[in-house]
Image 1 (cartoon, helix red, strand yellow):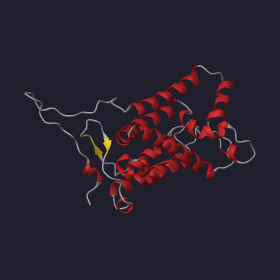
Image 2 (cartoon, one colour):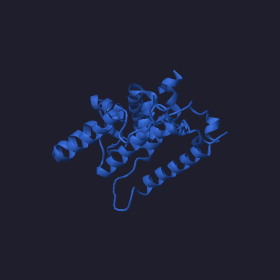
Image 3 (cartoon, one colour):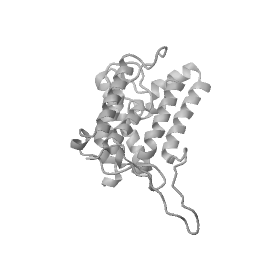
Image 4 (cartoon, helix red, strand yellow):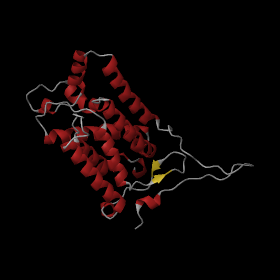
Length: 245
């Protein structure tokens, strides 16, 4: 079996009428509207929290929109926010660095996945892998009181989907999209590229979660949510993939 990297295809169109040969190139910011909308929403929410809300108002927002595991312990009434926060927590971020890193990875993995799935299916994928990430975190820390925020659960789901597709990229349409059918599990474990990625990704998540993101940075990385999102994207890709419908 050839390695997934060897399956990457670069689409080139033929020469136009009476002209010189031209190639299809993907512009740097040629991202699907649904990915741009999520990025804009995350940035907009962070700007409002930073420059518009008072500390008391920001705390009230966190209580209502962040995912707080102890809310589901049976000690509290399950109000509207108990059902909405597993979706809204992804648009909140702990700081500029947290936001910037997530948006870069969202653009890198979200654009080709959205081009493959389509906007509606991608939005559903983003929402449900985020819910899976939140409740995987809850399953490990059911009484945690600290709010869980950030889009990294869903982004990890996108990485899981990319691994399931062997990281194959097709640019023949002028827009990068993950290509081919999802790999059977037997092929996943035989792919050096995928297995290497999975190993490195798991080690990085465990180290940053248990040790810390970087010296002097106090924010903790919710590696549990990352793993939950990754597993949801890896095993659940076929539920969203229009090419398999």
